[in-house]
Length: 50
Image (tube, rainbow, N blue to C red; front, side):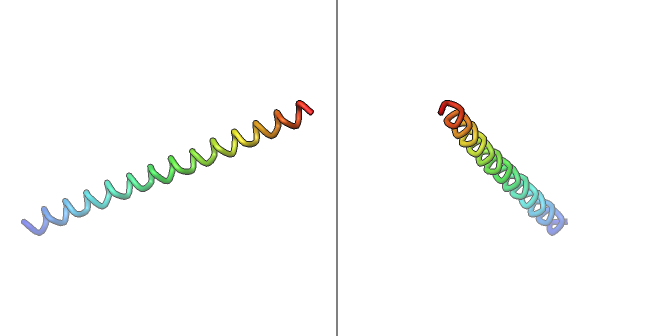
């Protein structure tokens, strides 16, 4: 009984950690995508004004 509860808590903590790391990865990828988008936009505006 006690071992089952401990295993369930351990699994729950593992799942929570996995979800948080996945969200951090998505946030990082999104942040990089925004930076690339801004850089491309600035370069395009700079090339257009010349």
